[in-house]
Amino acid sequence: MTTAEGPSDDGVTLSQPMTIAQLAELAGVSTATVSKVVNGRSEVGPETRALIERLIHEHGYRPQRRRATSAPLVELVFHALEGEYPTEIAKGVEQVAREHQLAVVLSELQHRDTPGKGWIEGVLSRRPAGVIAVFSGLTEAQRRQLATRGIPLVLLDPRGDPAPQVPSVSASNWNGGLMATRHLLGLGHRRIAAITGPDYALASRARLDGYRTALDMAGLPVDPELIGRGDFLIEGGLAQAERLLRLPDPPTAIFTCNDGQATGVYRAVHRLGLRIPGDVSVVGFDDLPAVRWMNPPLTTVHQPLTGMAAAATDMLLKLAQGELLAQHRVELGTELIIRESTALPAG
Image (tube, rainbow, N blue to C red):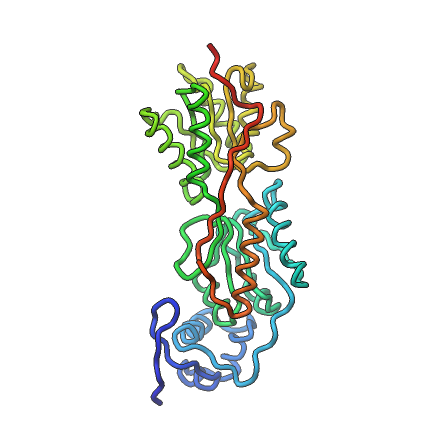
């Protein structure tokens, strides 16, 4: 059989879409087996499923009857449901979803990078309008399964560099790290420490790069001893702050790559009998609602989490309606919020 060919969105040359019968013939399986894969059923062996998914990806799938209408749902997948971060994001998704009469389904990955076994089958059976993955991602096979069913995917605050064909929304993390460090430099601090997030996190790397750039622009060397490798958790901020503040020449200011770690720094300062900002100034990153009630209120970089979530949902719904996106990478601005945790260095 001869078919016309043309390029796909990612540059791969694809045949004209095939029917279930044609895919079954090509794979050497029954039409019932292909139908189960197409409809997200689980009772197909992994090797056979992978073969059929690959053929669908390469050739496309032409339904013999009209595809079932998407359910009025948005799938929202979180790396972890802890603290105020997911709450602020859920607000933004819910605002847009409500305007379009859509419900929101939440999933938690329990700190895993990607959804585990069984997740994709549930999504395919629900047929949502689309999936938003927050500080997480999907495997290549999971992305392909969504794409072959016409279920769009958008990454929000992605952990790593997104695949070229996957839209994403993030904040201006580099500029946020630059602003935070320049604020401390402007107050006269020269021994400025940074507590990062995990190395794999794209946002953490960008914020640390902003910190380094600010020091370089001020003509100051980056002291590796003043960089603490954190994990975006309160405990990590506590452990790194205690190490930094016990150095023979401790920092007079600490920039943390999220507000949770700033909370850990506050605890370390209290344990060591020091004061904020009298002995050490502290700047966080996120501007979660609770930080304005810390003692003293935290100076931090505002990351527009609710706005980022709303932008990701808008993109998702455009894709679900067959529209083209004006841009695949959206980056919203950050802003330094100065409160009472920063001051001139002592002496």
